[in-house]
Length: 144
Image 1 (spheres, rainbow, N blue to C red):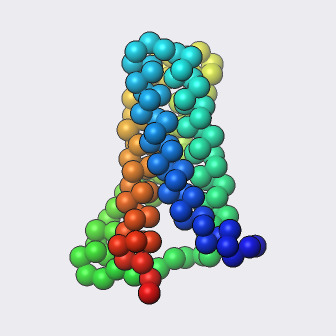
Image 2 (cartoon, one colour):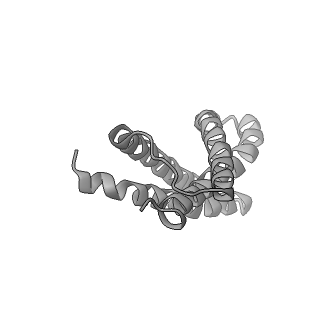
Image 3 (cartoon, rainbow, N blue to C red):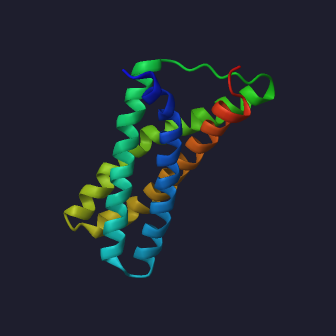
């Protein structure tokens, strides 16, 4: 695979995390204001962004494997604590998002709303913590 393409993937992944936040928040605001059509459109966009993230994430890690963290001392504890929470939340969201979406598609809003109230903040946490992990690994403690 093209090494230039692989080299830009971490930055693309960070951009997709940011895009996720920038789509999810207005999607939440849309439904809170009663605009179901805008909510549906924005949440569909969030699904596309999430799907692209997953595809590019798998490509990146298939190509590079494990990426060691260069930070030392307290930075390692902070980084791995955030990474651990991020990975657990990402695994959870990989289950919650499809369940939430299927309930909406089926018009089961009585079941969609209660899980969506948990799905959104966890999804936002995954996006935000992914950005923190990216900044720490590629900027604050970039390998020499």
